[in-house]
Image 1 (tube, rainbow, N blue to C red):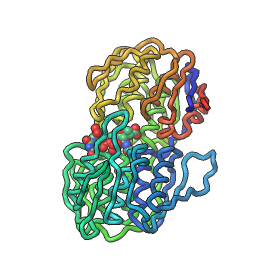
Image 2: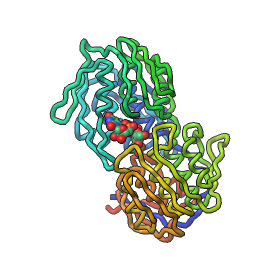
Image 3: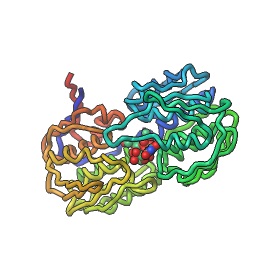
Image 4: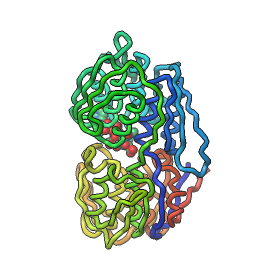
Length: 427
Ligand code: EPZ
C-alpha cells in the first residue's frame, strides 16, 4: 500500500490548477446511458472513482474512449457511447467499492425500463441509505422490489410516467437519480426540496444540452417535461469546489498564498465566507481565486448544511486548518453521523479537539508534530495531508487510496507550490 510522506513547515506559494469536479463527473457520466448517441465530457479529472465508474459503464455495455490528452495535462476528454445496453445490472462487487454506482439506477431504468442494482451498503462516514432514491423513483412511476441485497426497479409498460415528489430531507444523489430518470418519462415531473448543489446545476445543464426540458435549475423546485429521446452532446465538467476549498486551507495552514487557477468563486461562497471569518484573504481573480494567509487564524463557528450552506465535504479540511488557530472553533456536522474519523489522527499530531455528539470543539495549539497517521475516508485523508504540511517533522499518511479517489495528482500539485511531499510505495 502506498503512503504519502510530508516534511512540514514550508509556506506554499504559486499557482495551483483546479481539476474537474469529482462529484459532478460521477453524475454526468451516467447521463450517457440515457441516449444511444455519444456524450463527450471534457475536463474529467484523473481519479480512481472516475475510472471505476467507467468500468461500470463498460459492464453495462457502454464504450468509454479517452481522447488524446498528454499525460502531463490535467483532466481528460472521454466519449461515452451507450448504443445499446448489454446489461441492466450494477453488481455488488462494483457498488460496494464505489457507492456513487447507485447513480446508474435512474438512467438505466429510464432507458431500458428496468434496472437491478446492488444496495450500496454503508461507508466510513455513515450508513448511507438509499430510501430517498427509491421513494423518488416510485413517485415518478417505478415499481420496486428488494431481494438478496439488490433493488429491482421496473417501469410498467417500459416507460416511467412522471409525477411529483417532495424530498423530506435534501439528498444530492437521490435528486440526481430522479432527475436522470424523469427526463425520459412519458409525462411531466415536479421535484420539490431538491438539492441545489452546483453539481446538480451541472447535471441539469448537461441534460438540457442533450435535449432534456428542465425548469428551475439551481432552485429547490425542478420541473421536468419528459421527452421521447435525448441526443448526444459535448459538455465540460465544472471545476471542483471541494478541491479548491481544500487547497485554500493548505495556503491558510502554511501561512502561504496560492492562486487557485480555474476555481469558481460562485460555487463556494460559504467556504470563502468561512475562510474570511478565519482571517484569510480571499479574492476572485481573472482566472480563479487568490488565497492569502493572514495573521494567526481566527476561531470560527460553523455548521455544515446542504448548499448553499457550508459543505460537509469541507468540514475535515477546515478542522485541520483551525487546529493551529487562535482560540476555540466550534464545528457542527449536521449531514453525516460519523464524519469525525480524522479527529483521533489529528490528535496524534498534537491537535486539541473535543467531540460532543455532532459538535467538535477545536482549541488552537501553537504547533503540530508530524506522525504516522491513517486515512479513513476521502476528506479525512485530506485533513491529515493539510496537518502534515504545517507540522514539524515528517508525517506519513497510510491508506492513500482514499485520497486517490478525489484528488487528482495531489503530490504533483503541492510539490509545484513548495511542499516537501512524496509518495512512497510499501511494495
Ligand atoms: C453526495 O453524497 C456526495 N457524493 C458526498 O461527497 C457529499 O458529502 C454529499 O452528497 C452531501 O453533500 C457524491 O456526489 C458522489 P446525500 P450523497 O444523499 O448523495 C441521507 C465526498 O467526499 N440520505 O446528499 O450520498 C444520508 O445518509 C462525498 O466527495 C438518506 O437518509 O449524499 C446523509 O445523511 C462524501 N437516504 C444525507 O441524507 C437517502 O436515500 C445527505 O446525503 C439518501 C441520503
